[in-house]
Image: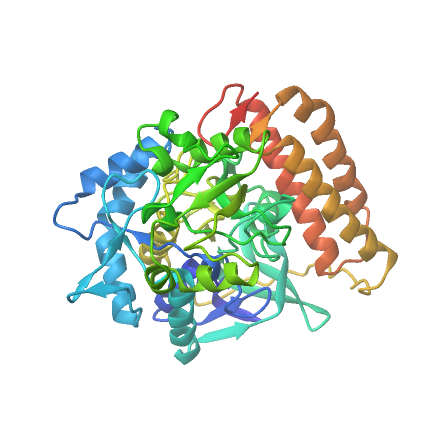
Length: 489
């Protein structure tokens, strides 16, 4: 297959970019499962932007830099915030119905924000945006959608990207493209406890690094403070907006422990709240308490969360909600400039898989969907369509059966990687143990998986998880002191 633009991933950045690119040429959009399966679809909170007369770009920039512990790329932050308002109104034009009050956008607040600046749709903002973008993409004649298509490897030679190999319908196909765009989202599934869906196995990071793309800041993995403390995979997320609307954090002694830990209390930046909860759970459970709100209010404001918690026998208007931190978001990724360009010619990246530098050492809540939107809006200005495509002759590995010994081994290794990463590259890290225990174990897994001649999605995902893990571990060992989400014991 040949195309002008090959997009790998169908979250907000991939879909938004596809709509822009389709005005310039032919687009093939490859997605691992269904078009709607992405981290975007799980985003409950909303999108931060300057939308209120009492707010300003200066305030939003200051909050972003403070949350990122000033490790951010300030120019990228300024660029994102100054384009934030325009991005929200683009979504409204596409059909997203943000919650309003008296014909004005109703805004909420989350950790690290000093103003109400988050536009939202109930507690299912990401799902609403995803559905609208999917609808618009499906309407476009220039966009070919390949669902249940797993990107196996990028096709590259001499630091130039020519497309990607994909597994689809149990066959391997080559797709050649003028420009290849990685929008594969996160890597949370490399951790035992995560809010990320099963598809988030670090494929984009691993594929790009294999062809020499630079990565940056991958030691900064954000752990969400409030996942439901029930053994599910992924963990069910209790949106930070619950705290933004007045919920308190309570320890086993029924104390509001954040009162003495940070001036913003429950609304301190995520890395701080997650770290304090991590300390507390060593001596007993931690709860979210929003029993100060009525049942009617909570059903209306948090319909999905309220309904889900009832299935666990928890009425959030009457009961305490048991919570625990879980791996949530990668602040680093494939290194790009503000136009999504990588150090590999014709390879671009944006969304969570990319590192523009806006998040620094810790992401400010609700800047993620904003980043995905802003940079996928801007990148199109840098893209050009060519008249001819270079097609390379490359080997296609054979497909391994889903019940083969190699596949069963890969499944086992996935779980092993998750345990190693949770223990050694979690909320608090011991650098000596990373060097002496975690890295040798993951290296051994990587070497064994690389020897596997035949492949399939399970085997490839296990290898991607191992390789992404090694990059995180290596990055962590180079940062000797605690910063943001990287806490050294």
